[in-house]
Image 1 (cartoon, rainbow, N blue to C red):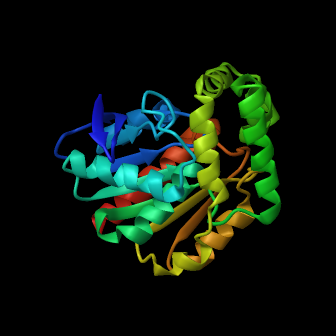
Image 2: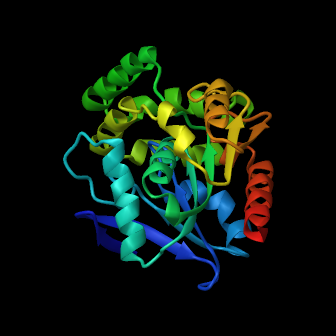
Length: 263
């Protein structure tokens, strides 16, 4: 389904019991809402799950860029308001986790619990040059040139040869280069570390042990800044830990949400 929010048409899906607590899922760069397929069955047993394509991705509009993290956060806020959702658990991975952090800072009353996965609160100075190069590649060569380098960052070598990895390759090459470039600019402006101490929400941090892009050290920084947060490091997982170690990821998420809802 699509709904106009924050001036763009946002593609979204809602599944699960209509009266259940809501869980909002925000995906990574070069992905779409299908990234969360491994989480849907266990989550929708007890939760109303909202997943959406962020601007420039999937079936959501691709407005002229560049985009800011504030733009992407305003999109999901407007989506929730348009759907009449007043409070939600918020689960974001990678860029989705960056959006989740800013959302928690800006709209804490709308979040019941926060789950930040394979993400960072600031972009290292040396990484900006990497994103500038990725933007250049997307402009000149298109997304096909990003497929295998991205897969090498996102998954461990054993997983990259599985059938499940091919679906992710399709998602990367299907991403609109304009959306990729717009959202890459949003990541380049990431600078939230010093603001994280204002978050006083139940928070779980999940990171793959082999994550190259947003490594364990970045997750530990978030953990240290958000008082009372929990951290789980998943073995044999890189950046998209929700896919590579779906069973362990789902167990951690469901357990945390159940504990939060019981309070």
